[in-house]
Image 1: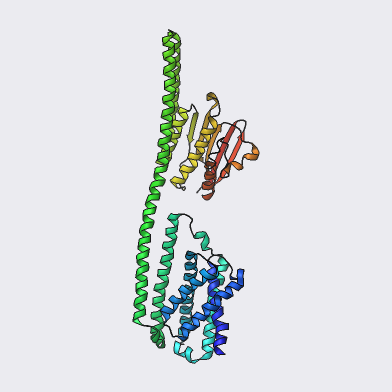
Image 2: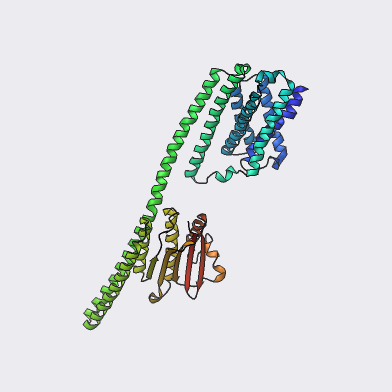
Amino acid sequence: MEFLLRFVLIDVPEAFLLLAIGFAIFNRSVFEDWKKALLFSMPFSALGEMLGLLQVAYQPKILLMFLFFILLLRVVYHTKLLPSVAMATIALGSTIVAEFVLILIFNSQQIYWIDILEGKWLQYVGSLLYLLVLFLFCSIMRVLKVDLGRLIPRHRHNRYLFMLILMGSVEFLLILFMNTSFFIRDNNSPLFQFYTPQFQLVFQLFILAFFIVIVILFRIYINLTINRVEEETETPYLQNINDLLTAIRSLKHDSLNHYTAINGFIKEGLFDHAREYVQHILKETVSIEQAAEASVQVLKGIKNPAVCSLLQSKMAVCLAERISCTITISGSGQFSFIKTYDLIKILGNLFDNAIRATSHELEEDRYIHFEWGQTKREQYLYIENSGPTIPKEKLQEIFQLGYTTKKDGEGGVGLAVVKSVTERYGGKIAVKSENGVTSFRISFLSR
């Protein structure tokens, strides 16, 4: 009868609370399916009682419970392995912490394990306090709405970081477990029979194995980080080189047309026409050179070399496409709080979008105006270009992933990326389009 009462009133509630703690780290309620929760709790409680009757030592008992917890999650809830390990880690870690807290409470009152074993009412009080501590753990996590699922990354690079943190947590749990067993042995001598050097050796080997895994994961993570940084660093420069090559090809094509025209005038004996044509080209070249020199002087005020390189390549494209490009830089903020890679995404996509739009206009109507400055309240970036007017009902759709005006259906990513990066850093983006002029304004509160 006593066994049945202990099983129903202590063991099953304990298993239920441990499952609730496991669910709580993913901001889920154990009452979503109480039948499955009961199906989980019964065999888990039975295993605990069976290990107790067999007098299995503390350390292997916890290890077996840990593995059985994962197995039951996989069988009953069909949970994936990684979340199952996380749930089992936090659940069994809670039992160790709860037991440790309970020992501290009793020992502070000069009550030791032998006293608990000899007094029935102390056993019941201890069990109730133990369940209360578990209940508090679960309640705190539910109130805080902890959700480990949001922290589990989708990218391979960040998954290794997550695994590194998880393995480190398990390593910490094992070390805490070892220290707790030492404390229990030294302050509650009757428990010495549950402490054997052989089992301590097993756990030390587990700790060593986890440490080796952590070192391997750390090395993989470092290598992936280095590769990622190299890729992020190379990408904008490769794009700049491609822009410059495109500009060179365009200039070469224009030069060939000019040479062909001059050769035609000479063949026909139209020397006056040839002279006028050459003078016109020279004036245009001088005008372009002056504009380029003025822009280069403006770009000297940009602190970020990668951004400066990007704007130079976009200016080269504008020159090749006969687009009038003016750049104004004022203030020293220049979005220094944004990572270079993300800043390149914003500027590159905005300029590409402006160049593509204004290319639909006649040469004399093509222009792009870029302004980067700050006021007392905010830092802002403004880009304006001539081109097709965007209907008012489409102004918000242009930021949707996949939205494009290209006939081949390609693109539809650039402006969505700009909006995403801007909002991630707490900024705002505004668009305006009327009378053949479209403008984008990105702003951040001064920091």
